[in-house]
Image (cartoon, one colour):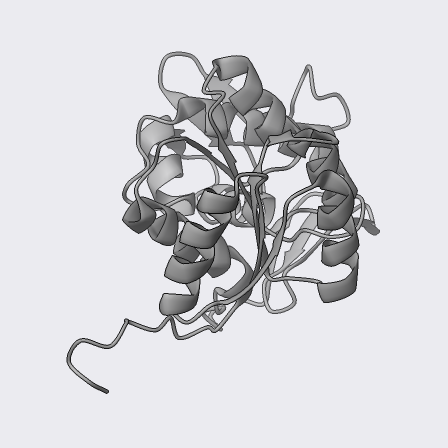
Length: 240
């Protein structure tokens, strides 16, 4: 490889970039392709949904503001079909928009303007959630009726499958492998999202709420994922 050739990502992952600003699309397409990604683009919500269904990308980079709708409907469209990682880009940096995007199933949220190096780092974090190898040390983790098949990355509750996004799965696995320990917000953020995340508490709170809705009999009175006020969370288990 020539000394000044662009650095290539090992994955060659397929990305769908959705943004209605032509200059932004060109910039993202050029930089992402320069790092070895395959890139398809869309500038409307209609085209984005059609492209997603047709191409089944490995990751979606999504602007919220689109001429024929908003990115939230695209997040819903994708989450009804798969756990494909979604990174939202938006000039709307309000807490409500961030929480709404995450609550609908987005994996990350970046506010414009942003640095391409930061976006690349967040793409790598999101892709690791769908490609992270298992350790081979333990095939199943069980807590009561909740069972995680580590090799297959499958979760079941009382024998029924529980459908988790890749990030939800990684968060649950961290809780299960540290059962009965108090884990701070910062510890959880850095283990699941990476070392650059430590102050993004809204990410964690949204994901814990989503996990509770999926694995707790009563999310308002959780028996597994309990809050340690002012500290973080604990996964309670009598078996681990």
